[in-house]
Image 1 (cartoon, rainbow, N blue to C red):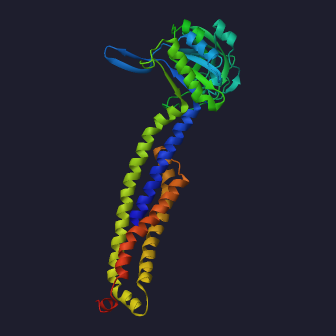
Image 2: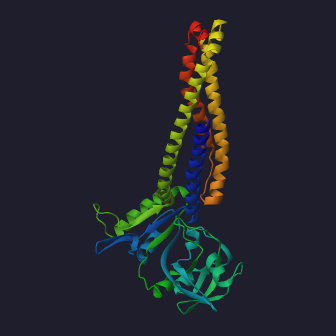
Image 3: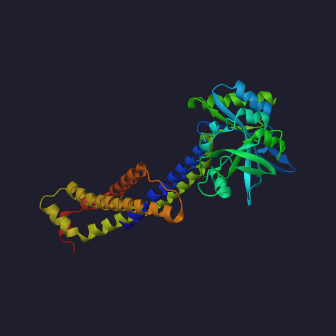
Length: 382
């Protein structure tokens, strides 16, 4: 049964690793915001070096205004201008990502405030020096559980008033800390310190949720028209939904799960062969017993059923122990290796079914051999 136990446990742990990784990816993607579309600016090609989307900012304020006014099914739109710079509070300082966004950014990202208020459209229009701080940044500058609202921080020697404290979001899709951030009106950041005149990304919140695909199509057509892209040319931008982002990151998880399942399946086959060999030896050792049963009236199918039940029982018992081992090993993997695991009912049912199937398949040949023994030959077998 050992091969079956190892194989079933490997299947359960392997599938739980894939399921856990998928759940973790989906959680991080969801933390970006519900019903979110991300519009990335164009790629960059310079001196033989090609960068990905977002490397060459070509989304203009006019594009942002057009999406806000002309695309239906949109409840919030925010551009993003991003830079990393030194900030200071008293004698505390830190190197933090500063993002310039609109007043609709928190709605687009489904990002609640822990305390304080969001900055307003007036703040954005007038480029007022106000900001929102993330949980990690607040902890670094002011300490644990200290409300920073009302405090003054210096960004590139300019004083900003903190008007809101963001709820913790955790890690993003690439593992970065989303909470180590400061949000300011994009108009002030485009003046200094970044001095950008265009955006690398736009965040669009679709409402209702079922309109995401329609909104994606509208944005694509609108930007192609505004950027005068010919029909035979590729987009100079990318509009990605959360589902596409999730599928992109989960592709590797699926491959990993398939590979682990394949090698676990080999272990199951080896276990099945082991059961078949043991049952063949059992038939040989119990030849006289089989002969006596046949001589006193047992039929071939009775002997076949007896040995088949024994093989299935071995497989099912091994499968049950393997399931128990899988339930025990998966949490240990999470605890000591830090790898997310999530045991699914489907994997347990599949593992138990496979173990029973192996018992039937690999137990049938030895049982058939026992059923076909000649009673006279079996009785005089030594």
